[in-house]
Length: 166
Image (cartoon, rainbow, N blue to C red; front, side, top):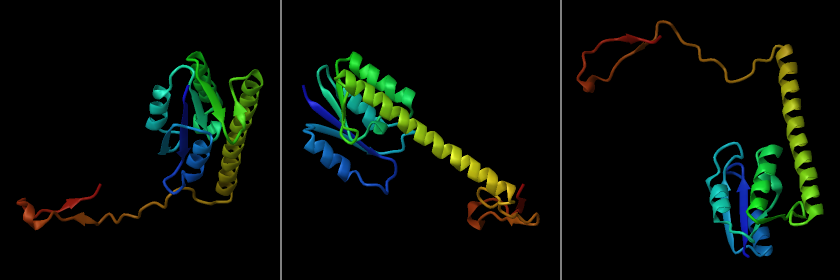
């Protein structure tokens, strides 16, 4: 009946120290951590989930650390409960081993997904408004001169020919 922790930050510029310290305070005997976006593969999360045994407690700083979306989070939580593993979120102050804890987890997860959707919606609206005002989006295009040539290095033992960019 061990407490296993998982900490994640999205970018290499962010710091894991706060999450790891809180997981230690919660009594975690082993902590898995990584600096990866939630949209990509998360090998340390998978390692933590594989490490867990029945009657263990999986401790996270916040529920959004383990799920990319509400559906993903609920799927992971359900899978862990089927394996007999409890889940605790420190920041959300939720223990899913109780009925009320499960309800609160669903409510907070729904609110987090709603917040992410609002951010995407506002960003899209802002882009459309900027484009309507004539703002160019994305990286500037490279201006290529049609008269540019690539000249191979002289020491590559090929004839000194010119090739054009296409």
